[in-house]
Image 1 (cartoon, rainbow, N blue to C red):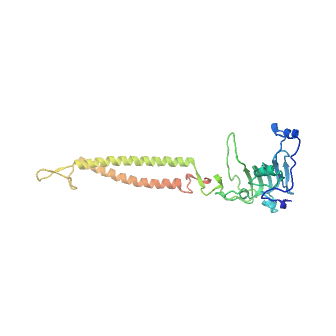
Image 2: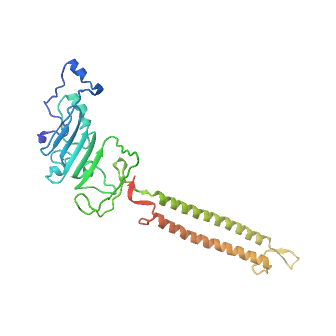
Image 3: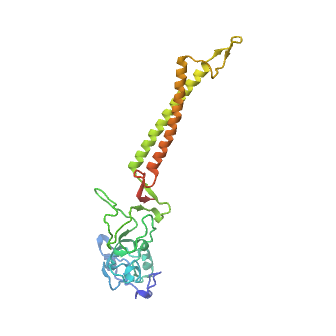
Length: 313
């Protein structure tokens, strides 16, 4: 029967749901106060290995079976694999096509549909979860032939009264007892687009980086202020230092071989040393900046501000 289904329209011709009845019956089926109501409910195409727990009043069901994200040939169950037990909880099966059923008054037969079903919790012992839901790889990659739990709906809320933890790699082996060698993290991918996925920032390391940068900038500011002060003093010493010329007793510009007093010589010497020290200080500060960059911005560094495992776009 499943092979005769037109999976594009999901409509079987010449089969009509009985929705007729008396006015009193229809009034009693309005749904008010949780009374029974007339509501289109698609007919689930059940496989031999599946146990179907369903409601006759609302469009909700639980299917216990093998991995089947689509028609009878889909998933590991469709390939005849073992150890792919699956629990599929669905509310609003094929809700995107309910309007068509309302118009046509025809029975709709449906397979699981990861796109059209309104809300789902899919729990499988072995499945290709990323392919089933058409998810991009991100940094974590594409999970195949592994156990998975997938939750899909228009809005998802995870609420913890005391806290929520997202934890990866709690065990050294996966559900098939294969050793998990790779270090897995958490990818937060908006719009199912991983082209701009970047490492998350580690707050403590970032605070340390900002603190060290502020300290270095403060040192640079102090060096600059001291340099300006010494340069101005040196310029004043040179500008005010004059000699009387033997010719007509006129003042002359200072010469490099002039004999200074001991005090003025020592002061000028100190200014020269300070100016030299500023240059040396700036040189070592440049080295400090390189060290800070390697410490906080290099991949693999213990104090790198970028998360090694967790990513976001």
